[in-house]
Image (cartoon, rainbow, N blue to C red; front, side, top):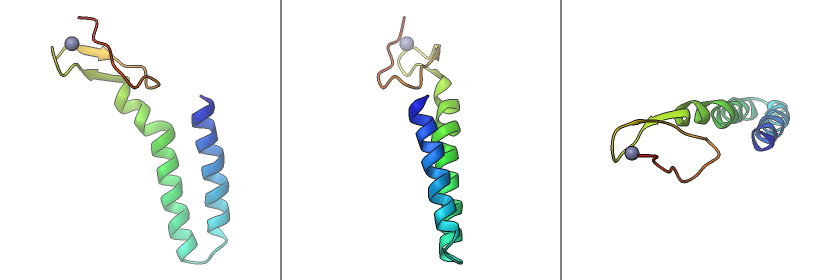
Length: 72
Ligand SMILES: [Zn+2]
């Protein structure tokens, strides 16, 4: 949770600072916001549920875990 909040806070601060630079900064700010939203929300939804590559059973995956242990 802290990790995601940091991404959101620093991403928004970075985007605001970049938005002060005309044209190029605006484009970068949009890119930063997209990256932050993807990091904070997108990744979690992709990893919440998935099929096990070994037995194709549907698994609930903790996004904080790097290694997924299949219960089967
Ligand atoms: Zn499995």
